[in-house]
Amino acid sequence: MDVFRSICNYVLRWGHHTLWINRLDGKFTLKEGVSDHFPFKFLLNIMTKGSQAVKQIASCHDYTVDVDVHDVSDLEHIGSIDAYIGRIRFFHDCSWYLLVVCGKTVVGQLPGGHLIYRINRVAALPLSRNNPAQDLQVKYRPSNNRFNRPSDPHKKQIAFSQAWNSLKYGSALPDKTQRKSLKVKEKLERRLLEELCKMFNDSGAFYYSTTGDITNSMQTLHSPTYDPNLPLWKRVNRRFFWNKFMLKDLIDSKDPEADIWITPIMQGFIQIERFNLTPDHDHSTTPSTVMQDKSSAEERNKNDFVLLLIARRSRFRAGTRYKRRGIDKSGACANFVETEQIATYNNHVLSFIITRGSVPLFWSQPGIQYRPPPVIDKGQEDTQAALEKHFTELVSIYGDLIIISLIDHVGREKVIHDAFMKNIIGYNSPNLTFVSFDFHEYWITSDKTPICEQTCVMRVNCMDCLDRTNVVQAAIARVILEAQLRKLGCLLPEQSLPPCCRLQWQGMWANCGDAISRQYAGTDALKGDYTRTGERNVKGVMKDGYNSANRYYLNRFRDTYRQAVIDVMLGNPATEESNLLNLKKRIRQQLRKEDEWSAQREESAAHVVSHCQRLLIPEDEEHVAGWMLINPQF
Image (tube, rainbow, N blue to C red; front, side):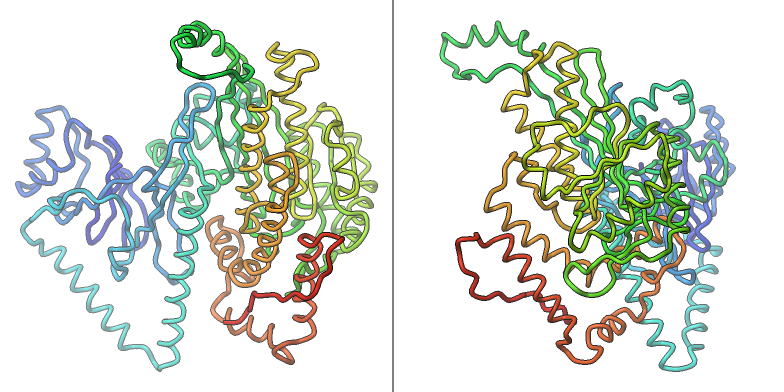
């Protein structure tokens, strides 16, 4: 996909289709008639002969040219991109940016041969002419991309008008305060733009496919209501269509020519691995073993199966850990993730779905303490109504539900556990089965016993739906996978996964848990060593202490910007995170209410030290002292 730029437009070309985006108002125009057999560069070169000459040359080759000579007289070919994500702006009086994919990696294939791509790098193309060209960061081509053309009086007039307006409005600033406010807003816009690019470039959490649907489960893809003949964006699951708002202008146009420019982007995790169930054997390459290996290669391949693990994070009530908790009035829960484990063996495709989501109550954890106590924000009537909306929607999508709650029955989490239990009992739905157990008290002794049989979709949650949830979901998924392989005859009736396959599978689920945790809390998941290896170790405990403290830092000083970017990207109503002009001032006031080291902050530091002490120091050793090394000051 090629990108061209002029004073008035950005032009994206894909085959014989072109998308023109006006740099003045951000509006788009769809045009076609320039094909791969009639190169765009050739069209630009012959434009010096006039539009009539172009049409005559095109008619000789049976081409249709739907391009105005004034639109292309100063076009510059600035590079190529992989996909168009959409357009975004952070304030109503700021300029638009075009977000494009300029770096991708092939993750693998869906059943059916559809390629899946992970986004490695994006670029923000500024529609405003005041922004520097280095913001583009697209893949640059050789230097002869600029077409030297006679100057156009029409373009000169536009450039002069722009310069005059800039001088006029610049001199109209009434005072120093307004100029300072404008600089603050520009600085904030740059900060949010950096955060947007970081969210895509540093996380590896966004995926897309140009031909296959990665947002719907295998069951949905093979249901009679699913129409594979529709354009891809009309088939995808709206819950996981993350750039839908950014493509709103193209979607609302209802123009069939716009379909090829609408590429649904999904946030989550995808990993594809090939497993071999053949027992381990000696892979030496002596002459006596080479023939044996060749003769048994075909037999070993018969035992291969491919496992695809895909986690889809919902765009509804999306955000970061302490900024988005619980439920909203529409019934959407924070950190809702649908995870699907797909096993393919020969011509068989087996799928298992499990979900997670924040506790469906109106609750939060306000304050600046380390691990602040949870608070119920609304009364029973409002909570019950939202909870019923949430589970009614899930039942309509998945059928019956098994709700597995891992919230502690005592301590600071007790208030959430009691409220959740009360509302579930009040709902009294025959489609729900509620299972509650204290993870920290029971889980270690029940790792070999299935919690319950898979007769419907399970919804697992702890407080954050991260660490404990990862461990339990992985355990359930392993039981299901082994049962599926036994039914296919890949495993004997009492056989488990071979050790090599088990470690490979555990690595996939640990990677998935880390990815979801980074998207929600900013760090890898806690207890990841248990998911990855099946046991706890000192290194894992120390890593948990580091990640736990790092989550506190990220929540206090970075998540506000990330939450604002997510809200703008998804088109959510303005929230307190979106109003960041006085952010530093508000945080300083909050941290220095009475004294630089208030009692609240001392309590927070003590909580950090106490938590790390419980994680790291054995019972037979004495704790001498501890200090919190994070200094939350600007």
